[in-house]
Image (tube, rainbow over all chains, first blue to last red; front, top):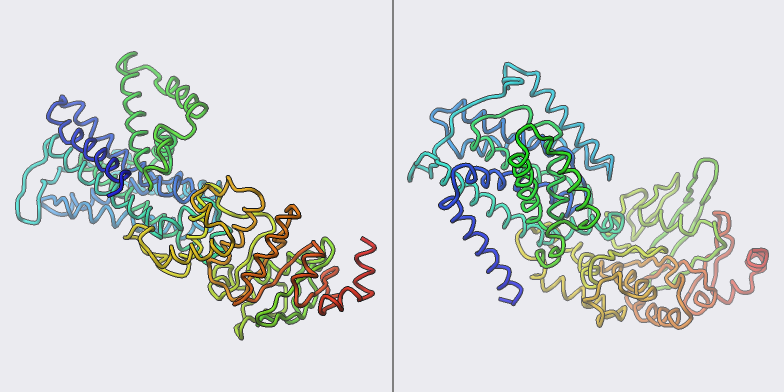
Length: 318
Length: 242
């Protein structure tokens, strides 16, 4: 192991240890809060593949997140007793199908045109979900029971906030390691090459569109996984989560935390949600927290354009 | 090795290239010269799939490649360097050529770390060596001098292991010393390559090329050895009036 790897893995273990211990020492509210940060972090991390690595800004990640959510809802409502793994499979299938659809039509476009197309697609799915009341519950969404944490008949235990946190942590950590490896692989290098210089990448022999389609699929699947986790944590699926505000927040998490780092978006999500919570607590629930948050965001863009973890970008990807 | 038949490109009413019949022989250095706007870059863009010709055919090693996308043409063995430097400035010199070498092997691998492929690394080192940038392999491409970036441009093209290398003004903006070095470089890499070169610098063309084609207003004005071209009255007229 090189020195870089030693430091990296030592740091990784310390952070993991802290996150594993956290639910044992945190009160109930903050335990749930931390789990939620991880879930939003996973969503933001999935979109980092497009924003930070491939250079395509997606404003449609709410669609993948939402379809993961409704896919999980379908599995949990249809099959009795509700099964955790079936929920994941249904959620991934839902998000994957939508991702393939969006990828096919949007990857031939670039820059702002790509962003707008993803935004429009996500809004189409929002309208479908919002109006198809018989199937999706419309505005009220769907509520369901939480599945038990089962392991293929070996054991089964109901989720409490601590075990749910550990489960989410395991999924997010595994997703991070998988995505990090993919971004370091030859395939990941092609994506970064597309970000740096798309015409040149095509000229040296890469079918750029095909790589972009796979990148959108990959990103959509992990966003869907985040949706499944959110559905399991909160026991509901609602059209609000397919709305473009969620996509916008996802982009903000990325910019705040540092694009192209995978970890940055998780840190960005934590920073944003914590700030919002603290502002709410300091000034009361009615406080228009978005105003100071907006100023902080603008200040960060000016003084820290690389994001919180941007300084470590190359180091984290080595 | 490469032939074009009646190759024509029109932008609206303007014919950038009209009915160009052209061919390059294997293992030669073939230069294309001509005044600004003669259609040299348009010709290159057709060969490398950036532009679709309006009519005509391009045949490379017996395969018709007319209108194929740039990535397919690259895989068939035609590489190009750009007149306006087109590298990846935020990547190291090594990464720049590594990604080009990788386009021929393991490109879709998602499981292994990219540095674990000895064959790719070896090809990248070979390409860097032949353009004399091995010593700067771990510097960021943005930090190279203009001349070095131009040579990296050639290195990236070489790393795709082409059969035909198209150089678009490789000495553009270079000092006399840098131009001399680049000429040495082209002589060195020519041994298993066919090279097509667009160049403004007459001295470079006359010294390097085995054959020269002169384009003017999208048509072939003359073709021959450097000696023949120097004596051709039509060529002299075009160059004197500009």
